[in-house]
Length: 170
Image 1 (cartoon, rainbow, N blue to C red):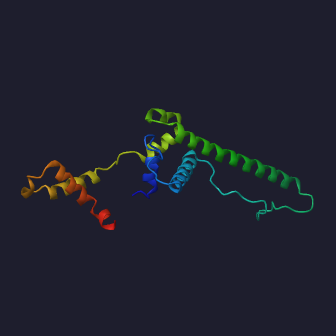
Image 2: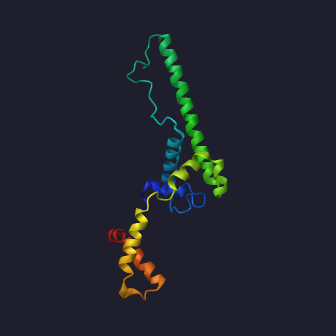
Image 3: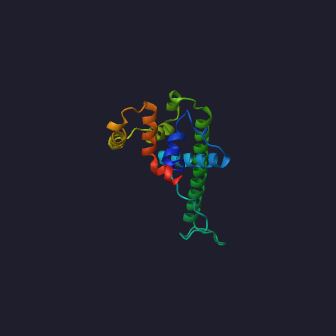
């Protein structure tokens, strides 16, 4: 479960946890990269890779004087690459500011994009199917022969039964 990106984003966007649950620097770096990528996606910024000057669309450098159209295209490409770098640095700044400054849920409205991400990944399930499965499993455990179970023992048995698949893979 710790490797699922949706669950990681749910934890990272929660001001109470952010990156505190990660153990080493590699995990922190990966989590920041994941958060920045999702931040860009939520903002709707252009996430295309930068195109080089020697592309096949006729904008490559030539020794002869370039035409006015080529000069204009190069100026546009230069402006676009500068804008893209500025947007990328703004994303890094906003994410770093959130990670350093946001301390609780009351501060979250100061970071509107992060707040959208928080709402997206930290919502309750819209279906009751998971709860119905839980009650069904509980009914199988709490039978007539097991009326003497304590609450704690019943919860442990139910937890083990529900998470049996994960425990078998562990």
